[in-house]
Length: 295
Image 1 (cartoon, helix red, strand yellow):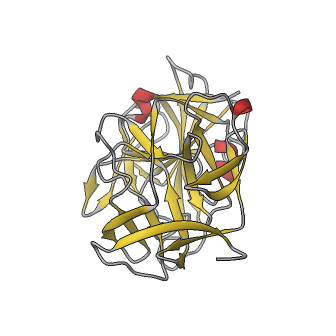
Image 2 (tube, one colour):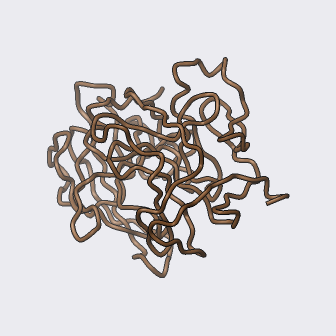
Image 3 (cartoon, rainbow, N blue to C red):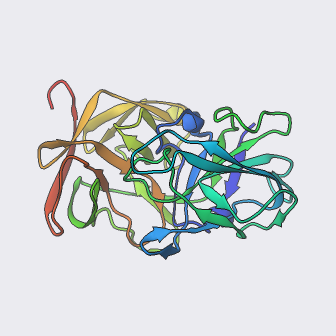
């Protein structure tokens, strides 16, 4: 069984990713990270609910110890009601300090509380809700084992030649002005791979990624090798990609990787993960993906 999220549900958020995470909960696209757009002091804080239903429980859970984040997080369990494909399922929501409690009813879009950062986050990751779905008889507390998630929304694939100028940066990342969303706010877009389709995931700093859309082609007719601008990325099985042993370079120097996701906001552009390098605003960058044996 798979859970399908509608375009109306996803439209509450500026960005989403099924695969851009190092945690097994996302294996096979069994969880989704949803990034709202409203920001306070440069950080997104509002946490709109992706489902309607009754809050079953909230609890504080342990998070991996990191020097830059608290060692705890929060779990919200919501028993979903209809109508829709999530009816009768339990939604697991993380990274939200709850403003709700057991017995509360929430509608889709209601605030669940305040988005928070925890040790689950790499320093370059923006605030988001982590969401997964379980059948009623499944253990709702285990990190892994949620149902696969399908997306009932249009994702426009954007060609990108690997170049762009830096428009913003932080201590661990830089964002380029390309590929640019052609019509912000109207639809979700992602980076197009060779042969068609949108690639999602952390390349190669997370173990694998996914292909969320193959431009209408059935998976059985698609080539198993995934590449970008002729640079081989890995091999796809179904929609899940196992990255090759590759290195991402920016202007021929290695960086940690690329953060790949789907977005509908006007700030969409290739995100370089580069905690060991800094780039100046306006600097022109060429990105390539090379076999680690020759990079």
